[in-house]
Length: 107
Image (cartoon, rainbow, N blue to C red):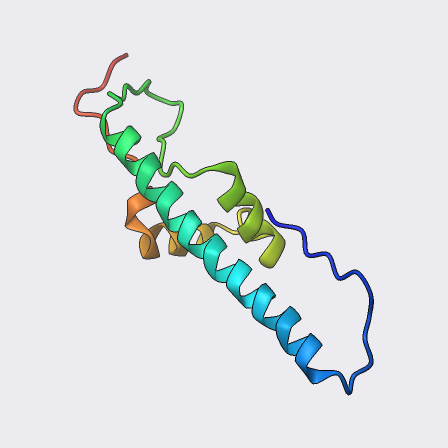
């Protein structure tokens, strides 16, 4: 996650300075979204190479994503991951994070 440091507040009339600050914020957010997509693709590639096993009664792995994505969504939408409807919608809208199902069950 990136920190935004504004060294000194300027007068509201100094629009060029504030426009520069806003441009930097928007560029940072855009860069973070691109990196988030790349991390999800990398995780999906590694997930596809990992064989999965399951044990009856322990539940099923449904999604794999990195901690930074988890924390960013939780920061933007408090309680997001605790709400089953929201997390299911996230997985539906981002199929790349869906975990592959095991081919066989191991008991």
